[in-house]
Amino acid sequence: PRSNVSGGLAVQFGNWFLGCVLIYAFLFGIGYLVFGEMFKAGGFLIVGLIAGAAIVRNLQRASWQSENVERVRGDELQTSA
Image 1 (cartoon, rainbow, N blue to C red):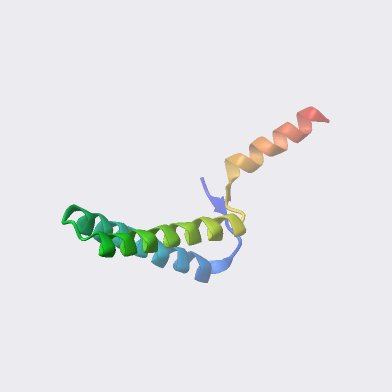
Image 2 (cartoon, helix red, strand yellow):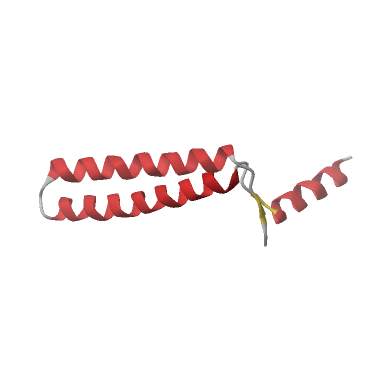
């Protein structure tokens, strides 16, 4: 299904970049955690959490919806009237 996204291509590339930051931050954070370097691990894990929160915020602001959600909402409005 196609999706309706308002926010433009720049926002979506920003989310892509933040997703890369999130993955690598958690990768290195868990690695440092395994090897006992708690200070570095905490820093990387915090960066990963911030990147994840930024992605969620961007997707909520872009009113991310699929066609199926819109179709269901339309059907509910017709049956309730």
